[in-house]
Length: 295
Image (tube, rainbow, N blue to C red):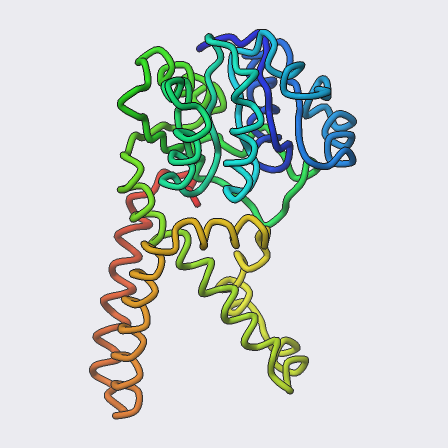
């Protein structure tokens, strides 16, 4: 397990804050320095012990830093990368926790230029509907997956450093290329969030919304749980990965049309066949998950 003298967390909410707390709990870091847009968020992170110090600026934050985690929404990555680039020491490795990779890699290439090898893209597959420093917890990544999408320019030592940090948090690390990452997560993560937001938004716009929500129970709650996630973060994810997401949305709409045809025809056998196949596929998927489960 690597030991870090100093790490910098930019964005001290659920993702960045949990990363800091996990490394602290593992005894893998001496000092965690926080940076972010809102002073009140940083003050809360300091008060809660998520970070040890608030940096004045990037020059102060990056001095003698071993590792930087960018934990803000992906829409802010380009601006933050441009801001840190002039102050980035040659030995410091930067990674991120963004849910899309193609756009973040492009922003990093533009900001870092010939130093792109210092940036190792990452995506922790863990989260919650809550946000902010108060939502951070040391066990968030335990037994969860983290995907790294290393670049050709990354030295093996840089990838190993980031991998070691996530493994110290208790995570299992997988490797993908950025394009495959964005295609896969458009299907299994971004589309479900889009659908949950859409269903709640459609209900909320009806004249009888209060009555509908009044009778909604477990099924509706389970389907729409992720609509409680951070709106700014998911807006940025959807826009950043819109090309892959549009393809998945079109495929889902085609499936809904097939379902509508069966329903309109009162095709009970067709509906049963579809429902049985879906139930079986889900059971096979669940059976392959670790005993502690994953999101």
